[in-house]
Image 1 (cartoon, rainbow, N blue to C red):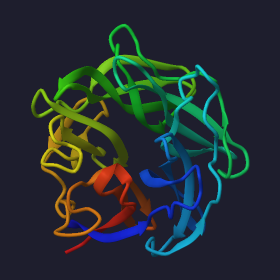
Image 2 (cartoon, rainbow, N blue to C red; image 1 turned 30 degrees about the vertical axis):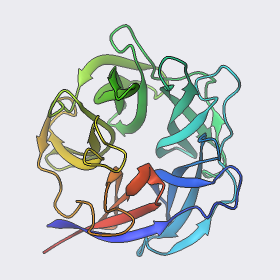
Image 3 (cartoon, rainbow, N blue to C red; image 1 turned 180 degrees about the vertical axis):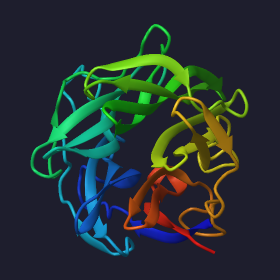
Image 4 (cartoon, rainbow, N blue to C red; image 1 turned 30 degrees about the horizontal axis):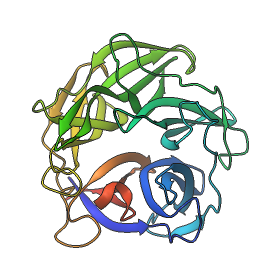
Length: 309
């Protein structure tokens, strides 16, 4: 079995002031008659907001609806998400939809600070309200730099989160670049989280950054797909994002595998330099991965399908 790339499905047309570029970090929610794919898009000064498209349940290349507004506005001045609301994952919780997201705020010595927030929808995922004005997973004494890109699973009475955690800012060519790894948190209610500083995916070298996990339960335990990059020449260069894969029995200790077959950058086009930000869902026995290509989502979002030989 291998992944087969199906191509690009959506890119913002730039006609809306809040959505000038990018369809970044696609995050899928499987519904009864469609797949709703949330994404982060940017305005002219680079601030991220989240919106969504709906695609056909059996053929995700068919876009059947494009939402005309962001699902939530930027945070208030001074809050953790005043400069960006970037979806991390979306899940159904009773008759509500919960969105865990990355909140962005600008800094001075380093370019930005990010942390994980929670918003709740009571209209089927059309709009969201913050559960708290502040983050739910943030810096701690053992994680002093940043948290981001949360993936949350409600598993047999406990809530589990895998997320990106900054370990340092590295000075590269006169500017600071972030290095981060995937860590683990746990909760009884999805609101208050315990962060044991548990490393999930050991980096291959000191300059690797890995983040944006997508986790799925299997008969043998769990599978994870994630993004990793070098900290040198990673903006569509030789160090650009690739999609990694790991397996685990308990969700804490992970065995990193070879990169998934079929998910390397293409020869030409929208993803010839980068493959990033996977989100994997199961739909009636079929497995889809939504992901980005070049420019961290500037070239749009696409999808791949897990295909039997």
